[in-house]
Image (cartoon, rainbow, N blue to C red; front, side):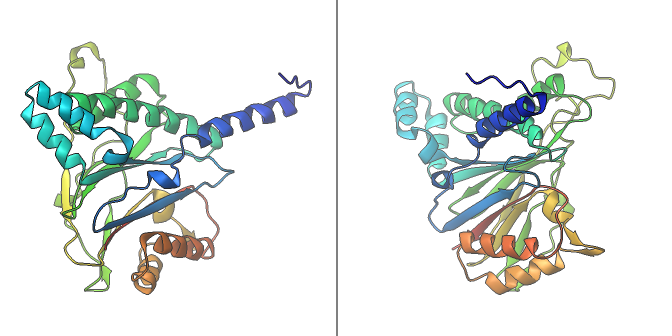
Length: 302
């Protein structure tokens, strides 16, 4: 073990150690979901260093979990509904995008906590129900209400894209997805009725948890989460998930979103999801000086 006599050197060493640990939860290339007819790619551009408050979690169920073993076990136990849910998991994938308030490297600690809690909870969800349910997010929300400070919160979107191009998602104060129509060559307007959102994770405890009566909250409780359901109708349609770093990116008074982003997507819409991501990334980095972490994920109907 190396000793550092200089307090600044010691602090820098601790920060580097934290960044090295945080890097281990960043998505690896092999974790990007692979689905028939659906092309997915995304990434994070931290404002400071290599770690920030943004985080992406991919859940390609057939890669991350042994679905066949769970199906055999559920069959042996006569749990037909669980078997059906697990079979459907083979043809869909989950994507979570988190945005912790602030963009310091140490804000990655809250993202790391959510990362581990979410993935551990998802194992129990698959074992009990055969899929990820709203119950997981109700419990995560209440857990973070008890463990995070008032000035630190997390916005989140979690969605599942299926091979039949259905996208179901839950939003906790996160910017709503946008859809670029290949046929109409532009972003499509979506009714607010299909963009239901809830408070940031941890700001209000959940009403719909079994420990509700053991929780005190002077501001009340969050109502039950609801799912939104969209469908990518046409070949070449592009669904874009993103954090507010992209939404608020600008060049002086000129915002990047949606006009310049839409123009760039129109230019590169024929490319793969990874190529679209890289093209947008290069374009926005050249557009203006960043003031926040930026994350986005491209989901394209191939």
